[in-house]
Image 1 (cartoon, rainbow, N blue to C red):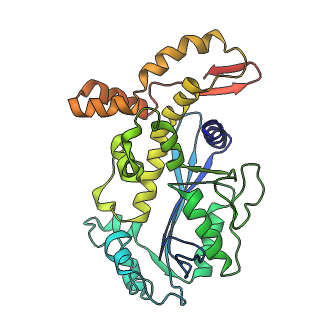
Image 2: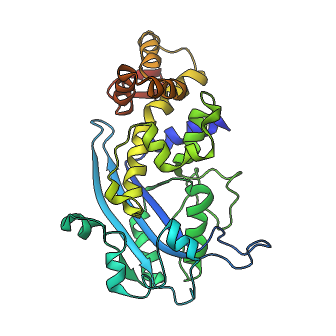
Image 3: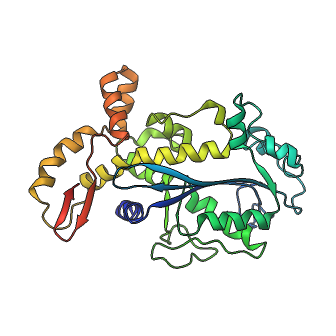
Length: 321
């Protein structure tokens, strides 16, 4: 399974240039009714950004974004715990356009930022249609999306007669009700990548260590406190987190997965320095505890991709470019 995550994630990343990072907020944990949760949860918010990544110069361009609250008439109440402690969406926000526009921006002192991050209140069919258009032709990216966000998007949009353009790894339409443990998805799930990368070096990271903010702090991804509890802010953090993960993902491939065939001399000469340039999670923890500035700076540089050449596979093997 580890090999599949590495190979598929790097393949999907290298073979595409457009990525749709998205996040959903819901009324509960289950997209379908179960014995424990007899009422299926519904989607309250869709937030998404579409980025274009230039693999040659590693530049990123934001193409479009979506931030909508769904005025779903079938929602009669929202769990107060979710409203007060999790996503901060209450019934007033999904019924009043003026309150929806202020959602998540009340504490922003910059009017321009507040305007950029404000939400729009729309009917569910409009919201899902706009999301499908933004996602079409791009790779779905998110934190725990394979197990949570994608199934929710499929089930909730189907209630309004729509089908989302999610794909399997092979490029076929992703069936509704797929088994996340048995289905390879054309997506990049950063929680899967994080669990893969750091369970070897730091088995004591704990469940909380795989949360978006915890990983961002560990990899020195800078976040704006003004964007806490804002879905678009989380999406931006999620994209930066994935960019910071890339060197580690490539390093994992080289450390733990044997290359196909005999690597060229150029690759062999590069590999020791590459391994040394990327601290493990255990080294991170020790450096943070000891306030080892040199190691932390080295980690930050590697997270930005400054110490690592891109690797591409061709018929002659693996070479640095």
